[in-house]
Image 1 (cartoon, rainbow, N blue to C red):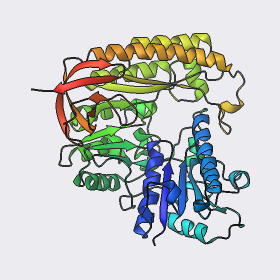
Image 2 (cartoon, helix red, strand yellow; image 1 turned 180 degrees about the vertical axis):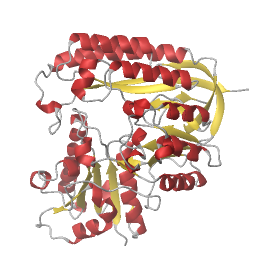
Image 3 (cartoon, rainbow, N blue to C red; image 1 turned 45 degrees about the vertical axis):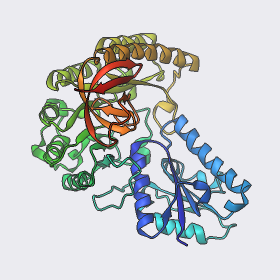
Image 4 (tube, rainbow, N blue to C red; image 1 turned 180 degrees about the horizontal axis):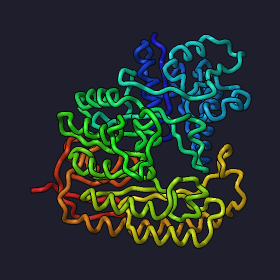
Length: 457
C-alpha cells in the first residue's frame, strides 16, 4: 500500500502555502494524502511560532499527537514530523525537548519532505530525531513548484516573496524566515494564470511585506518610497498588479500584508485603475503614537501614516482599509494609548483588529524595560476593542441598501470585496446561491461584523 500521510497546518496563510508545497511533493512521489491523522503512517505538523498563543497551539498539537500515538496501539508505528516556524526558530532546543518527534523539517527543507518522511519511516524506534533544519532560511517557491491546494477551488493564496528586511522590535519573523526574497514577476504571473485557468475566482497575494515586492531585485540603492517610487527601476507591486489585471477572466486580486513604509502614489493609482484589484488594503500600522512607532522601529511616524491613509482614501474610490494595532507595548504611556484610541475613533477603519503585546524572546523589545502589567494591557485592549465594535456597527449600517458583488464561499455564506478569507466578516445570502460563483446582492440588514443580503432584482 502507498504510504499514507496526514497533515495538520497551523498559523497563517503563508504557512498554509508551505503545507501545500509539502503535500504537492508527497503526492507527486506516490504517497496518499488522508484527512484522518489517526490513520496516517506519517503525521506532519506544520507549526507557527509568531507569538505566544501560536507557540502554545503548536506545542499543544505536537504533545496531543505524541500522547495519542502512545495511547492507541494501532498508531504505535506512526511517525510524527514537525515542520514550520517552530522547528526553524527553536532548531537547537526542540530535538532535546521533544525526543518523541521522529523528524524536524526546516523552512528550506519543505521540498525534501518525501525523503525526510522515508528516513523517518525507516529509522529505528530507539534512534534520535532526524534534524534537517538549516541555520538560515533562503528558500522561495516558483510557479513550477508542486502544490496541493487546501483552499476551496474558487480561492487561492499566492506567495510573491519570502522573508522580511524590517527589524520591528516586537517581531521575530526576520530571524525565522530570513531576508526578503522576491519571486520574479514572470513567475508570479505564470502561477496566477494557471490558477485562474483552473477556476480560481480570487487570488490573494501574500508575503511578509507585499509592498516590497521586486525592490530587492533592483540594481543600486532603493529610493526612499515617500519621495516617489515608480516601477521604472524594475518589478514592483504596481507593475505586478497591472500584469495580473490584464489576464483574461472574471476574478478578484486581493493584496494582503502591506507595510506603510513602501506605499507610493503610483501604487495607489494602480489599484484605482485596475478593475480586478479589490478595493481593499491590508496595512498593519501597529500604532499611531510617534513615541511607540520609534520604540517599535517602524520607520514611519504618525503624520506620515495619517497623510498616507488620506491619499489612499482620496485616490481609491470605495476603499476598505484593514489594519491591526498592538496595545500594551513596553513603555506605552496612557497618553500613547489615548492617542491610538482617538485615532481609531476618528479615522473609522472599515476593518480593524487589536493584538495584545506578546513578549517574544529574541526580539529587541524582549530586553526593553517598562513592560506593562498584564491587567493594564487587558484593560487597554478592552477599550480599543469596544471602540472598534462600535465603528464596525456604523460601517455596516452604511452598507444597508447597497448593491454589492459577492463571492459565494459555501451554502448561504459569501464574502464581499471588503472581506478577506478567514479574517473579516461574512455576507449571508440565499442557500441556493451557487458556491464558487460571483453574484450580485442587495444588503438588507447587518448582524455585528456580518451582513445579510437578498438577490438583486
